[in-house]
Image 1: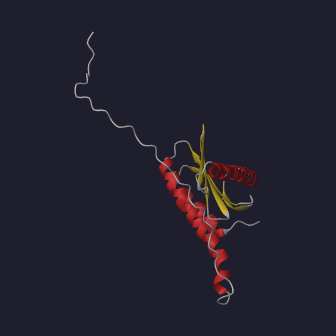
Image 2: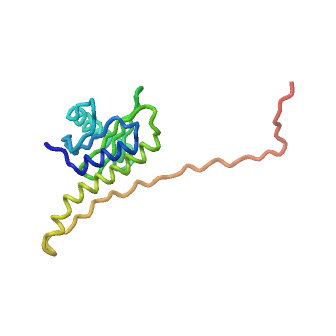
Image 3: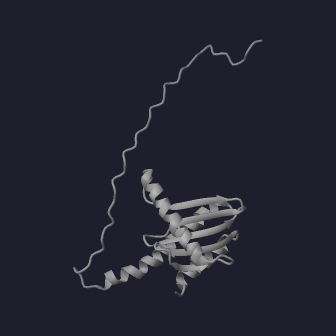
Length: 169
């Protein structure tokens, strides 16, 4: 399958903004490669691993009550693998050297994932817009009610006026 040129261009711009990136891969949730810029890494094998890791991360986030999957970060001896949800149908995975500015990697990865999601959405929503009025409406995403979180009250602070701050020997 040919790489999506718009997504590929986004991956290349991302690698220009974060020079310590060694690779970038966009895949569908089914593990198919949408676009890749991964020199020295076989994209189909990496996509299969990303699909597995993404599935485990989704289950982990759900089981622990953390909500919908957003991102996954793996740190190895030689660098990072960061995986981001890119809309409802794609996943962005970045490979970076260990000397990368992690905050920059996370920020730029989130921005690129949002742009890739927009690219994917722009391909699916025109069909809804072009249909005659009243025939097809955009489905609203089903939202789960947030679990009620409780705070444990802090113990009252004791104030001791004559507290010793030094020890005498």
